Image 1 (cartoon, rainbow, N blue to C red):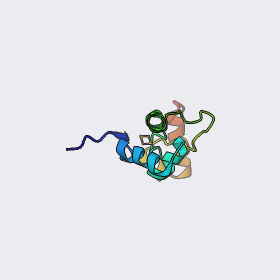
Image 2 (image 1 turned 60 degrees about the horizontal axis):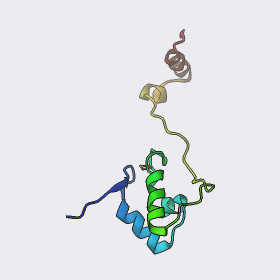
Image 3 (image 1 turned 90 degrees about the vertical axis):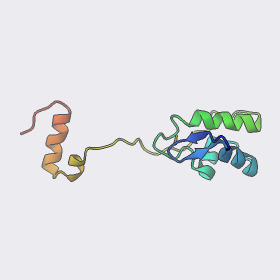
Image 4 (image 1 turned 120 degrees about the vertical axis):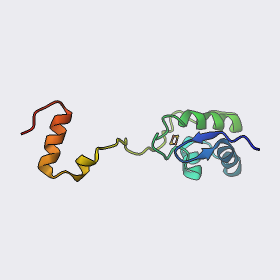
Amino acid sequence: MKDLKIICRCQDVTEEEIVDAIRKYGLKSVDEVKRVTRAGMGHCQGKTCRKLVEQLLFKVNGFWPDPEEQSTSRPPLKSLPIKLVAASEEDFDAVVARGRGGQHG
Ligand code: FES
């Protein structure tokens, strides 16, 4: 059985898939890898997988990706309690005030 190393857990992308894509398409940057394989498009937004993708780019290409090149990222995600989503506007203000330790009336 083949040993699969998962690089991007949220998108289920393996090291083998990324290395194959780098070789096949001549990828040079983290953003290019992201567009081709989806590694880095998940909830971590590259916080845990970006360094691993950079290491794979180095391993295959023999040079590091340009540090000036910034990959595009999604806005930060944060889970919300369902009561915020379902609340009326007034309830929403009260829930937010409670969350900040304030009073609601
Ligand atoms: S581990 Fe999937 S986006 Fe980073």
